Length: 256
Image 1: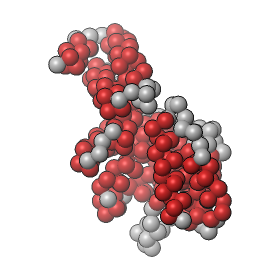
Image 2 (image 1 turned 45 degrees about the vertical axis):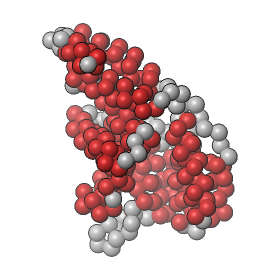
Image 3 (image 1 turned 135 degrees about the vertical axis):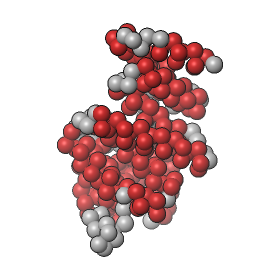
Image 4 (image 1 turned 180 degrees about the vertical axis):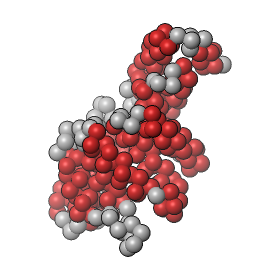
């Protein structure tokens, strides 16, 4: 009920774009951005749910609230990946993230952040829906195209996020003659290495590069990188995400 009242209050100012944008921005700052940044130190389900509601309310006031769109995409992903455990609920969240991003990419074609968080949601969408549906939707080609667009728009966004996504899709996509002939594990190593050389080398970048190195026969280097991830301390800003990468690195090393 409280959230409905807040949304109606915000909408009451919609006749004035200037007033509504200021109110939406303040509301986002208080109820989403600050709480999202505290997601590792509080109940993550509650924090992200609040951020989702704040973003949706802000977008309801101003369809041009780019910051709210980006945080909504981030929140869909985080809630689906780290705060939701049943598959059907994950599908609902990643569906929303995928659909929202596809809508706003058209409105903001020069924004690298929307494209990046689109790919984060789309990749997770493909994981929960499975290989067959992802193939029918042409997910691999979409991810390649959008990754290349991110690199052109802003190669430094999210510590080389465009290079990381491009390397990841080369790594994860199967080579299928006549249907999907461009995936290349050597290209995966090339682009994932570029990601690590752009900005801060993150744990997820190291983990993916280690996997690509192993796939291309560079097992010793792969093991070194995985051990580096395993022995890392999670960062304050992405504590939950880093813990997951450490766990995944342990599992990947065991699989070697």
